[in-house]
Length: 438
Image 1 (cartoon, one colour):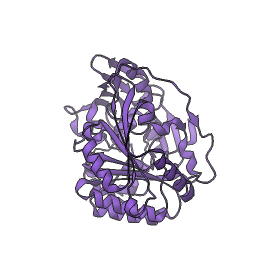
Image 2: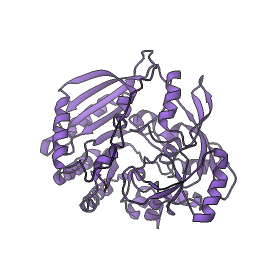
Image 3: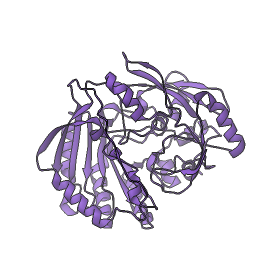
Image 4: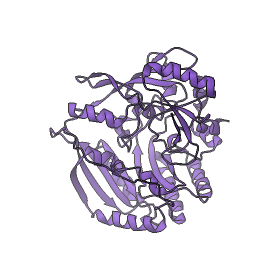
């Protein structure tokens, strides 16, 4: 047990979690029942990559599944693998990629666990082609405190299958899951980068090129004003067909301590944005790059969240439906620019129309915007204004990144929440769920 050391990636809000480790998957049922008897409720905790309070147990006592990181069964002819829920995407890639297989969907970090990816129904740069991670789950084993183990799939225990994908860990503890990988010939990505000068240009480029590339995402200068609002760099890529499956090992840098105050402020942000934009010349730039650099640029600096200081940060991630996306995103970016705040990494990306099996899945056809804000008292007023824009444009926020969403906004955006609540294991509850459903 490691007392008081577990938190969310955003380090805000501050609710230190007491972690109770589970070393073997056969212990999960006993551990879960023991936690309930002593603490009343608990929550599975993977590798702590959620940003807000969705990974916090309401009892502040979590059941850590990180040690459950084994591949149970693998068919390297078909790409189907069965893994324990605590395995990280990095650990899956290290084994699967040299054999010619890659994750069907991945977020911007490889340090998420399989269980966490299912609980938050993560999405990535290829949502417009592959949908969410939940679309590639074949089945999983769910442990509930009030029942025996349940095998859930589209054909068996279907309601629990749908409620668990994107269900924020509330329907049970995932013991193992079977996923379908995708075949690849190389560990490298043929990527392209295009610099553009306005939000209107982004929409033009995105509509033209998203169909040509498996992956796409866009960096935005969140401080740009007037006609330059929304300017940035469009990145896209495909797996190269060259037969190079080796994984090049490199030593990651690390930030050894949390800074006393945030290094992200209007001065550093303006300087970074200027230099980063100018670094990319006009016209199209094509380059062959390692998968690590393309998918996980921030993972190269371990504990990068510490640059935001002891108060931590909040990520604001919303999605605006296609019909309202241009005006909605432009209004949001103008408001953020006027406040002279934001993050080095502000990301726009297009989500497609592939439906997720998950009841609380975040993506919808439209444009997603995500950026980080150093935690301070001014965020309350700013987020309130941003929420109003999202509400008026029929958008919604991402629970996995949230630390402020009102209960009314959550219930309006996710009308299936009552179905999840009806299927929630009474032994499992989170601070997020109590905040938005009470």
